[in-house]
Amino acid sequence: GAGVSQSPRYKVAKRGQDVALRCDPISGHVSLFWYQQALGQGPEFLTYFQNEAQLDKSGLPSDRFFAERPEGSVSTLKIQRTQQEDSAVYLCASSSQNSWTNEKLFFGSGTQLSVL
Amino acid sequence: KNEVEQSPQNLTAQEGEFITINCSYSVGISALHWLQQHPGGGIVSLFMLSSGKKKHGRLIATINIQEKHSSLHITASHPRDSAVYICAVNSGNTPLVFGKGTRLSVIA
Image (cartoon, rainbow over the protein chains, first blue to last red):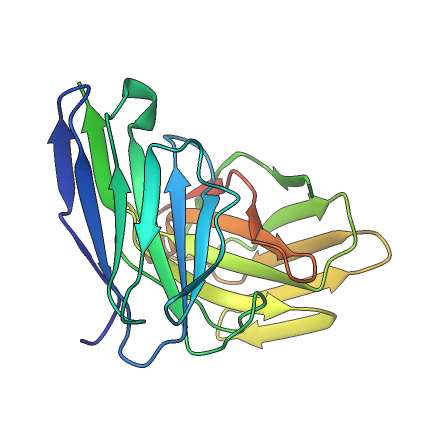
């Protein structure tokens, strides 16, 4: 596609429910990042993939959060047993460069998760 | 962890005004990014800087490595510039650390 695509755009979950958020990066992009953005705050790093390898998952807030990118393209962020504090916008970004310092990062529009 | 502070938090300007948004950080960096976020979440990368100054259209970004400070300037501001402007920094092989953003409203 022309840009980074995230789905669903909005997700409402009941507390305790599992959710899966999808990111389709730009075709051929090596690096893929997930961020969490709470209301009124800047994005916070969750995890980084270089192709299918998850190089850093230090930002995942708990073991309820899991991310994968099995074929080095589409990535899924899964949150198990959702809690109200998980409510946020989840942003995905990709880059053609295989480094932490990327000249050009392309962001998706995010998935807004609301946990009731 | 690097601490990134932006000022002002909110800014309202009249169309045509020259705008400055500031960003300071606490630890030496390898690169600084300026990003634009429109309502609905979409983020666009504007600049990446490691030294000096960059210009793109009406946008100018400068960085002073010694003072750990960067500014984003918008000349001849227009209502379509209304957005949240976010500063983010890299320190070597570490994740981007983002500021909280500056909400800009340009009134016609």
